[in-house]
Amino acid sequence: IIMPVLSVITNISLDHTEFLGTHPRSIAREKGGIIKENVPLIIGRAEVPTEEVLRSMARERDAPVLSANLIYETQFRTLNLDGSMQLRFSKKGSSSIRSICCDLSGEYQQENIITAYTALEQLQKLNWKISESHIQEGFASVIASTGIMGRWHTIGHNPRSICDTAHNVDGIAAVIRQVKQIPWLRLHMVWGMVDDKDLDMILPLLPEEATYYFTRASVPRSMDSKVLAKRAGEFGLKGFPFPNVAEAYRAAQKEAGAD
Image 1 (tube, one colour):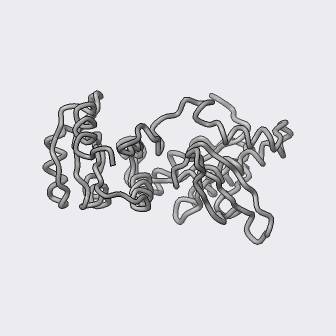
Image 2 (spheres, one colour; image 1 turned 90 degrees about the horizontal axis):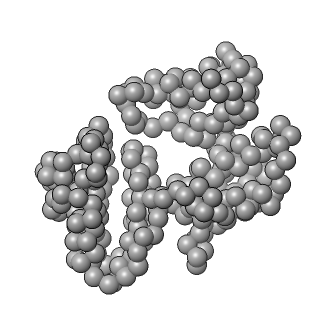
């Protein structure tokens, strides 16, 4: 059993319900299993009723708790010309502004940055030698340092093509909010899902004005693209099924054109 110096739980969303349960409380109890005796816990997003479950588990194990979204709040976010994101945030009740540049530019990364920053501050209090320059350099080079892909990831230009692997209701809702902030003439979406997702919760989030290229990834749990297209049609989403991602992406690029 690994004994961490710090435990971090980002947020609680309905996902992997066959393993974690179908209610936020049951998911919180499962995720709270990482809370260890006397080890500080960072909660990314404190919400009712999940926070009370996690805090109760932490009290039983004498684990101090910090809720990042109750400590910090975002002031504003801008996108830089190189595609990175500049996030300015402050402690609640303070006029002192902190600024972080991150090469992950998805809107939803704001919450993740503040959670990670709270964790780093706690590590500093535990006498870890982490300087401000370490923090700035780390956030600015997440992609290079970790190899992470598919998180609001620009994979092409002319037409502008963005890939995101959001896979639960919270994540998909955040991606669609950001899509709607981008000026476009026509919106083309290559879309695939695995077969354990709740279509009745996810498909209504998708914009009806888009043209869809329904597809499936080369993993056993992928939903059949024809089945997905049929279900999507029940929610007013129009498009065509494709047998694999490459064909769907090529078709979307061709229809979109250079603009």
